[in-house]
Length: 134
Length: 134
DNA sequence: CGCTAAGTTTACGTTAAGGTAAACCATTTA
DNA sequence: TAAATGGTTTACCTTAACGTAAACTTAGCG
Image (cartoon, rainbow over all chains, first blue to last red; front, side, top):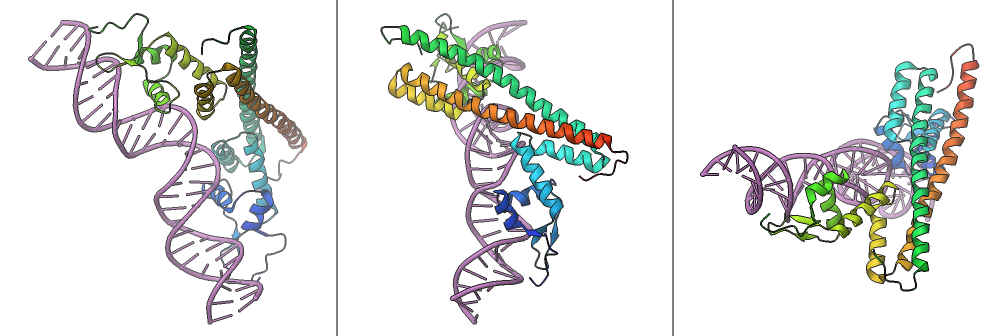
């Protein structure tokens, strides 16, 4: 600690460990412009403050929800260009709604097939001789 | 038609067009063992009968539901080894249930974030001066 | 007969989201 | 001082599900 980490600063490895991801992932997000280039310690080591940590957490949260990195980039660009949540948030909600719609479709189809399967299985079970079509 | 297509036989291109996929896709399924090697016309052209068509349709149906080709291979192998729907069907239902569970999780999380977003947006809208944190 | 359309195989390209390795610093510990 | 640890960059590897191109054969049409 030749260069004191300004208090509340976290190095990349610790941050990764804390969030259950790898350093590669964090660097990757930086590489594609999702995370801003962080400050460096004298040795060149990336260190993150409260803001960076929050941003990364937000990214992970969105990812969990099925938002792709590309979509996040879009949002990020949008934010960079407008600096206004009044523009960004509706777009985010739009994207989320899109995903929700897709998932709802999937669900309805999946439950439909589930029923079909149940019926099929019933039919099979009712047959005395198990000699049926594939 | 030097080699008469035995009636009810479809060539790969027509089959693809009929199902809205490409011939590459069909060959790929064959390549990874999901579709059996079909009969060939004298010229080497793949042609499919009722059974092959049904199998392909079933594959597409499962794919629509988010079942991966790898999972289908597992089912296919299972069927090849046991020849029993009484073994295959429960596994298929199991896989489907897994997908349903995942999707349900996604949905609950997505709706949670949606709420958070709504709240966040509200707060922002209520502020007189639009100067807020990213 | 020549052309085009459609088929064949082989094989490399693509996208997303990182994994992994190489070669190299810098710091801490024995 | 040597080793171990953890960071750095650069760059190629991976998986899924095909796309696309090359080089070739075959069938049908005019």
